[in-house]
Length: 72
Image 1 (spheres, rainbow, N blue to C red):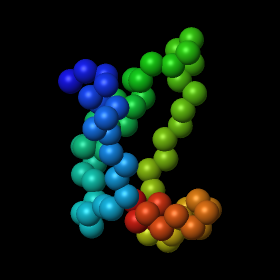
Image 2 (image 1 turned 60 degrees about the vertical axis):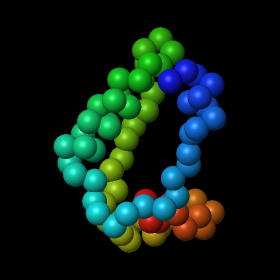
Image 3 (image 1 turned 135 degrees about the vertical axis):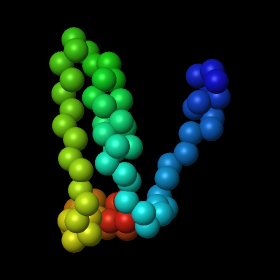
């Protein structure tokens, strides 16, 4: 797949299934994100895994009421 095709076919997911992401899958995704390149290799990111529904709802409120945030 070339770069132009990647850009043309990208999607924003805003509807999620009810099943939790298995720990092994989550670990692989986070490992991949952690290894992404950054300027001067400073890797300025932090990841937070939220599994509590009440916290999801609160985050949705903080995100200007974007309901899909609370359902992620």
